[in-house]
Every structure is written in structure tokens, then in C-alpha cells.
Length: 149
Image (cartoon, rainbow, N blue to C red; front, side, top):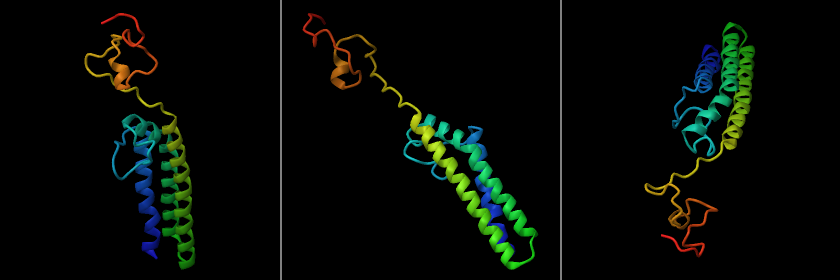
């Protein structure tokens, strides 16, 4: 039964660490940890914002796992250890999952960055940016029918 009680303890430690790193903005964009949705993986800024928002609930979920695992280690009955371990894992999953949803929604709210203009195209109104589709709504001199270069 010792092994059953260790599962929420160890998983809780990992989840709490990832949540704390996200909240402290020290979690780099990676393949394994943090909130990993299409919205958060758009760029480094959205990953940072999404994991900052989700960090505290995820860390709290990890603490629930740690406390539940510690409580299960202190128990003596087999049924009590199993029930406590399962409840700790379930509580950790629900709280961390809610934090992940919050982080995803926060990342979706971050506006997409404006596309960078090619070198030499810094607002000269020549019309080349419209052709490339980089600047919407502006009309160059030759497109408007006005004589220009």
C-alpha cells in the first residue's frame, strides 16, 4: 500500500512544480510541461501568458496531490489508503484541469502580433506592401491612380 500512497505524492510534486514555474514566468515553451494548446503554442508570449494565468490553480492542484499522498501514507487500512489516493488524484486533476482551461482562454485573448514588414518596406506608400498582403487598408500612389513613383 506504500506504493499506492506514493503515486499522488510524486505526481503532485511534479504538477506543483510545473504550476509554480508557470506562475513565476520561468517555464520555457517546451514539449512536456505547462498548458499546451494551439492558442498557447502560438508564440513565446502567449505561452508565457497562458501559463502565468494557469500557474496558481495548477500549483494548488499539485498541493492537493501532495497533501492527499501524505495523508494516505499516514493511514493504516488498505481501503482508506486506496480511497484517499484516488480522491487526491481526482482532486488534483480537476483543479489543474480548470487552471488549464483558464490558461487556454487567457492565451486566446492575446492579440496576434502584427506581421513584420520586409526590409525596405517601412511605410513608403509604394504599394508593394499591399501586393504582398502585409498592410491592409492602405492604398499606394500608383494603385489609387495618382501619378507617383
